[in-house]
Image (cartoon, rainbow, N blue to C red; front, side):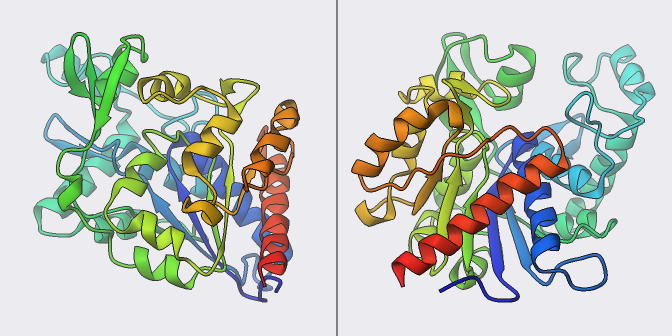
Length: 337
C-alpha cells in the first residue's frame, strides 16, 4: 500500500538537526503532494521535545520549540545555528550589568519577545499546547506543532560536580563534565499533550528526525504512552541516524550516548530504538553512506537499514533526504501489506 494522496506524516524531533529535517519533510511534501497554493496536501504534525525547557530570569524558555518555529518560518540565524536572524543583544547586556540570568546563556532581543509572550500566556493560564500554537501561528509554517506534553519535565544531568539543568551542562560546560545520567523530574506523572496520541494513531508515516537520541527524542519517548503509541501506530516508522562515521552530525550527542552506555555509532543507536518486529520502535533505520558496512548486521537483526547521504547542507539536500525517507515508508508499507 502506497501513501495516500493526502498522507498524515508525524515527525518526532528536537533541536537544530530536527528542524532542518522537518524543513526538508515539508519541502519534499510540497513537491510530491502540492495543493496548488504553494503548500501541500500532506498533513504534517511535529511532536517537539520540551525537555530542554527552562525558567531563566522569570521567563519560560523553550529552545527546541523556538528553533523549530524559526527554521520553518525562515527567520532563523543559519550562521550561528540557533536564534533569530538579525538579532541584537542589548537586553542581555543589561541583564548582565544587573548580575541577572546566566552570563554564558545569551538571550537575543527578538528571542526575548517570544519568551515574554510565552511567559505571559502561561501565567494567564494557557497550556503549553495552546502557547505553542499561538507562537507557531505568527507565520504560515505549513505544519502542526505539538509539544510532547503540557507538563514541566525539564532535563537534568548528574555529573561528578553535582546535578544541574541540562542547559547548564550543555551550554556552559559544553558537555565537558562527564555525565553520569539524565532524568526528567515528574515525567512519570506526565501525559502526552492533546493531539499527540491521536496523530500517531492516524499516521501513515512516523519519522524519527536525526535528533539527539538521549536528550531530544529520549524525553519524547519517555512521556508515558508515547512509545507505545509509536509502537502500535498503523504508519510505517522510519528513523534517520544522527551519527555519521562514529560522530554526531551536530552537537555533542556522543557525550550523551556515553552517559547511558550507547556507543556513538549508527548501528548502536538503531539497536537502541529497536525493530518493531522484536518489540522495538522502528521499521527501518536510515544510515549514512559512510556507515554502509553496518547495514548487514542490522538487517540480520530484523532492522532494515537502507543507506543514503545524510548531510543536510541546504533545503534541497534536506528535501532529498526526506524524499528518500518517504520512499522508504512506501516500501515498508508495501512489504508489510
